[in-house]
Image (cartoon, rainbow, N blue to C red):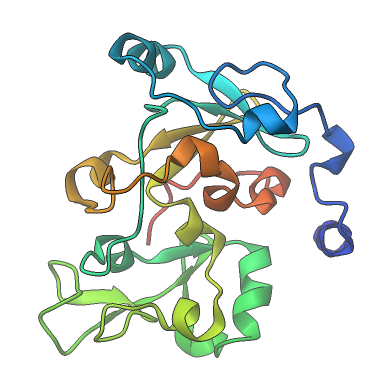
Length: 220
């Protein structure tokens, strides 16, 4: 079944195509035309931002793929070179990721099993920078603070794309929040004009909607 889903996606249909619905405005949840969705929007008032967080809205991320979003719609994110906090964790791998990773690295060297799941392994680094408190970091994180998978292959596992967001699966729906630890440690929050709500398709790969359990709060 997984192979069939993957083949459908490669063919261009996508996992969510059969559920496709008209475009929705990411802020209002209304059905809108593409030109309105792509138009510049004015920042919401403080009252509107609080309302959005307290009363989550449904957003179409990919055609036919909806998520319930519960975070400040004015939140921005841009990865900062000096910050590699997220790379100190082992990365959960989905079947889709394993296929991609196998084309770019030796799975025996780069992965490990925990909690019945596959992860990119953490390893001790012989350096002080770009490591966790225990001196370890992601297998692919180099001394320069760059991910070799992303730098050399322009590819990364789905879970890496999701950060700094967190995916929950509730009542058969994907719910998206900001990871609690990111609020404290991530240097890329609110340092640019790239609003997360306007770029959810970049943070939430379509493969998430094909998984039995797309929860991302599963760590090595």
